[in-house]
Image 1: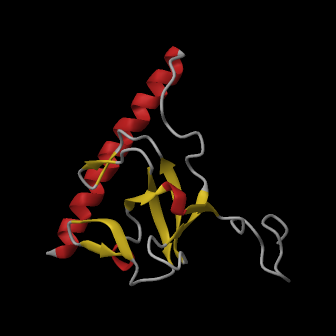
Image 2 (image 1 turned 135 degrees about the vertical axis):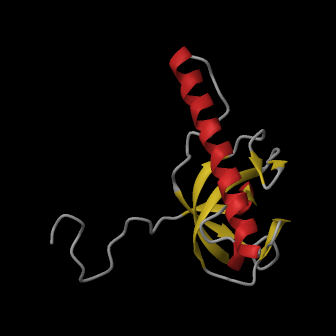
Amino acid sequence: MHRVRKEKMFAESQILHEADQRKVAGHAQQGLSHDRNVEGGKQVILHSCVRPHKPVAKAILQTCSPSTIVGGKALGPGCCEVLVNEVLDRKAPLIRPFGTMNTMADTLGFSIAWIRENIRHDTTAGMVAPNQPSPGQR
């Protein structure tokens, strides 16, 4: 039952995200300004909201638009939507639990809201491990 609920929330999140993407594309074609974060798509590290602020997940920044709906609520000022692609601390609590998602362990592959000041750019993204060939040099 929990899996079905997660899949439904993910599908709804994707539908809202696709609608937002179409809206942004339409505004861009018309030469209108929009509030979509220009840094969307960057790899980031999420730091815990409780001290000590340690890394709890790696994610892809989606948007920091206050009007974006995540988990049934608008982000509001100070939060961003991120797509979690690696969990570092499974027990870390979410700032906005929703549905069956209460800890970071529940979020892999899903978009969640996270406090902007606890998001850091991942400076290791795209780096090659020592003694490993770079992409395209195999």
